[in-house]
Length: 227
Image (spheres, rainbow, N blue to C red):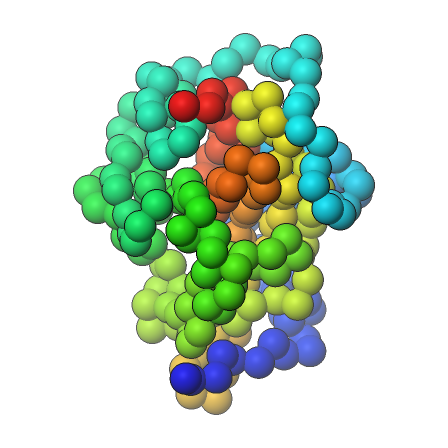
């Protein structure tokens, strides 16, 4: 087993310095430390309270804005309103569905999009062991390529950039945003970063992971229906 790249002490400082080079404003949420939000970016708004244990089961639909445009489409265990040009693919792996948001026509992590996963993926969702809140979704036990650059390896952070609870339909998910560094394979140097967004529904045994800062995904998930 190849040892995963160690998390460098300067990750937070380097990530902050590179944030302006990784697509501009951080598409994110309004938490205890609000991140700037680009137009059309994720608009999920978890509570400021850090997740601990199971989240509240239900949320009320009051105060929701007008639903996002798009055709209701089955995506794993959810029905989501997907914009035109977004496509649903089985995989990668068992109990996993990938929604591509660009011209890609396959379920590949190198294609811009997001995943909706069930029990089989959750069972080995962190370095071969079961996914656990507070640890990023990272099923491999070795260094994985970064989504946008296969020549760089992922270096996981020790703690999330933000966390809380976020709505998925009428249920609450445990929510995380992680800042993942992309480093060179030899003499590891940070070359870029990306954000990994996660919505985990422990009672529904469902996990949604976005490594591409998919625009408006938070709003789309708020309007989800359970299939």
